Amino acid sequence: MATGQHFPIADMTAEERHQLRTMRKRKADLMNEIEAIQGELQSVEGELMNIYYVDESSKERATILSSGRKKFNQDPDEGLNYLVERGILERTPQSIAEFLYKVGGLSKQMIGEYIGSNDPFNLQVLEAYVKLHDISNLFLVDALRMFLWSFRLPGESQKIERLMAKFADHFHSSSSSVDGHAFDSPDTAHVLSYSCIMLNTLLHNPAVKDKPTLERFIAMNKESVQQNGVSVETIAQIYDSIAKQPFKLPDEESSRSHEPFIDSTREGWLYKQSSNQAFVVGPLMWKRRWFILSEGCLYYFDSSVDRAPKGIIPLKNVGVRRVEAPARPHMLEIYALSPEDKIKACKTDQLGGRVSEGRHSNYRMCAASQDDLIGWIEAIAAQCQNQRV
Image (cartoon, rainbow, N blue to C red; front, side, top):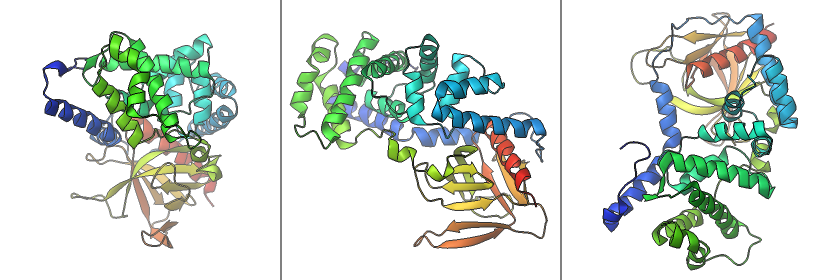
């Protein structure tokens, strides 16, 4: 079924409507896994190099990017101007939006403040930023969950208004329906999005003693039901979803999870090979880990909000290169410079968190794309150069 086409829910049975809701919820739950799998299945882009050599300009780029990110986390305008003036970013809404959406280590609070600004250029960035979220045919609550996790919602009501208005425009153009009910305009999505945020606060804020019932929530959305064709069943589904699972919003606690890595050079998801055996035909164990590159070490975590790393790979006397493997087209390898040497890494075991020393000669990771792979190799190589003794 083509994007934007909505289901004739009026012709569906109650069982069919239930199946439709289940399918859309399943899609939302699997979005991250699907994205990762799609990255693995991408075809090889261009000729793969066995070894990737990093010149002085590449190291300089990594250093500038790190400095720009730190400046952004203090003052978004200063950080972005710094990166534009040095040729890392273009002064276009699309370039800035992609930087905010894709680059790890940026303060989600500062992202929210920047895209919530009323400056004409910032409004263009906001529009491009919102469109980077793939919410095609998602249920409204699930689309809103995805959107609100990518930044920290500002406290000012006017900024929230601008953010919700752009989200509603994007949601309307992406799906044109909520649970199969066509929207007459983005205004309906706008009103219901605000209603979702309000309900989340009323239900899950401990300071709120008078929790709204389903009947009260339906009454709060009476206009949407009567004038905009939204069914009571849909309002009940929204209530049920938020009551069972509050919105996961970035907060000060999550932003402090990796405080020791405030000077990190690069962060992001990679797939890590769980052993150091050579790449051979047959199944290998690969696990998705959150990596942070900081001050001559590569740290990896089970998730992006964990405080303690799962393992640490020091970058002393090691090199990094690209590995040609058709089944894993975006693979890099960190290897000991001397064949007889081992990389003195450490990791925690699965039982009890006991720390053990790793004595591997190489570590292999896979990125989701060509650009991501090159970015990691450049950043790691720059740190390797600084750590050689």
